[in-house]
Amino acid sequence: MKNFFYLFFITFALLTIDAEAKNNMILKLTYGDVEIELYPDKAPNHVKRFKELADSGKYDGVVFHRVIDGFMAQTGDVRFGNTNNPEFDLSLAGTGGSDLPNLKAEFTDIAHSRGTLSAARSADPNSANSQFFICFEPAPHLDRQYSAFGKVVKGMEFVDKIKKGDPNSGAVSNPDKIISLRSK
Image (cartoon, rainbow, N blue to C red):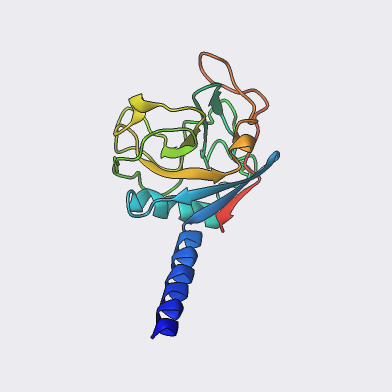
């Protein structure tokens, strides 16, 4: 009976680890690899969209077009912000998205703390599409206003190195870009 409990515990632990790994992503930056844990139980539609775009290579080559020191780094414009796309235009980066429909807001109890991954949007809460941002520092004014769906669990020091933009607008000239973004 004792061996049965050990076997059960080990099996449960392995299944839990495997389930967690399926919800983790690797963001490759010039500075190093960043591991992101996603929260499908909190924001299922945002996680599904993020994984779909990432695993199909849509984020590869996308610039961090808006980066504000002490606040956040924004990226994910797969139309105008993707250096691999013929429509790439740095002056328009941040105004585009994917060909998929916009997502309805999924406001959660996830706090916008250091490393939080959240969906960027316009003034319309239901306008998130492909763009996202990573918080450098806590931003409680964004809690329950933006759809947070993940968090950096390893490699935040590499996110900190992303080239910062204008202190007022966040616009970045010669921005860093995503090398690749895939499920772990």
